[in-house]
Length: 245
Length: 282
Image (cartoon, rainbow over all chains, first blue to last red; front, side, top):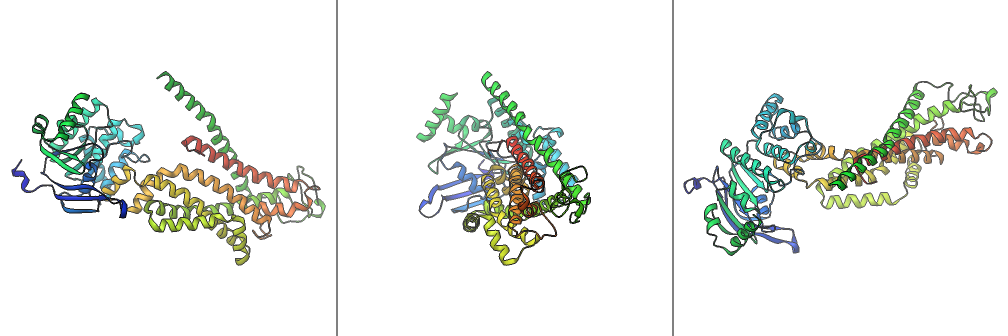
C-alpha cells in the first residue's frame, strides 16, 4: 500500500471545514489528513455528527468553507446515497435516470447513450426490462443498483459511498457489498466508504479511519484496528458493534 | 399485519370512492367544453340579432333559453358569452401560471435575498382584494379584453409563485437533486426537467383553483361594467345586462349563471379529484 501512495486519488492535509455563517459558524472538521490510493477502499467510521459526511461533501466539492489542502484526482467524483428512495428522481424512469449523467457529460448520440446504459445495467445486475420502470416500481435493492449504475456511468474513478447499505436488510446488504467489491475490481474504482457500521466496513474496505468530533483519531489496516484498537473511542465503537452482533 | 392490511384496504376503498370527484368532474368539464366549442362555430341565431316578434319570449323549442327584452336569443348569447368567458379565464390563467411558475421556481430553488424581496412583493400584491386592484388598473388603462387579461393575469401571479416556491423548497435539497448537481447538470435543467415533473400534481390542482377564480374574477369585472366590451358579451356581462329583468324574465339570468356554475363546479371537482388521488392535503 505504501508504494501506491505515490499518486493518491484523494490527497487531504490539515483540512478544516465550517458549517453556517457569522455567529452560527461551527467548525466541523479539525485538521483532517488522509490519502486514498487508486483502487483502494477506505472506510470512514464514526457516529452521526462526527464529521464523516462533511468530509465526504468536501471531497465532492459540495462544501466550500474550507482551509487546508484538498486534491481530488478524478473527474467528477460521484456519490451513492444512503436512502435509495430519495436518491432517484421519482418522476422519471430508470432508462432516463441512467441516461441523464451521460447527457450531462455531453454524450449527444442517443445510440451511444443506450449502449452504455445497457452495459452498466448488466454490470449492476439489472435487466433491460427495468429501464421502463419508475423507482417506485423497484425494490430497495434494485433502486440501490440503479443509483450505483448512475454514479458509475460517467466514468468516475472515485465513488463516495454514504452508508449505501444501511437502509437495506441484511441479505440485500451482503449482495450490494459483493456487487460493490466486484465493480471495484472490474473498473479499478476507489471508494470512500462512510459508515457507522464497523461490520459492513470490514467486508469492503482494506483501510479504515475512525472519526470523532471532526478529527481522525485512528487510522490503519482494518485487521489491525479491529484486533488491536488503540484509541478509546475505537474500542467503544467496536464493543457497540459486537454487542449488536 | 392484519391491522395494516385492513387499513390498506380501507385506504384503497376510500380512494376509489373519492375518485368519483375526478370522474364526474372530467365528464362535466368535457360537456361544458363541448358546449362552448360548439358556440365558437355555430349558434342557432346571431347572438346580437334583435327580433321584435320574440321579445321576452319564454324558453321553448324555438328559443331553448328564451329571449331577452330586446328579442335576442339567450341560448345563442350564452354560447357566445361562455366562449368569451372561457377564453379570458384561460388567458388570465396562462399569464398568471407561467409567470408564477418561473418566479416561484427560481425563488424556491435559489432562495436568498432576492427570494425574500420578491416574496414580500407578492405578499403586498396579494394583500389587496384582487378585483379592487384590477379595477384600479383598468381605471388607468381603460376597459377591453386584453387589459382585463393583463390586469387579472398579474394579480394571479403571487398565488402561483407561492405554491411553486413551496414545492421547490421541498425538493431542492433532495438527494436526487444533489446527485444531479454532482453529475454536472445545469441549474435550469435541474429546475425544469428534474424537479418540475415532480410538482405537476400540485400545480395541476392549483391550476383548477386558479381557473375557477379567473372565471369568477372575469364575471365580477364584467358585472361591474369594466370588463369586456358590450359587443362581445361574457357570462358576467349578461348577468349585469339582465339584472333589471331578474323577476320578469328569470331565464335571462338563470341560464348564463347555470353555465358559469357548471363550468366552475366541473373544474373544482377535477381539482379535488387530483388532490385526493395524489394524496395532497387540500
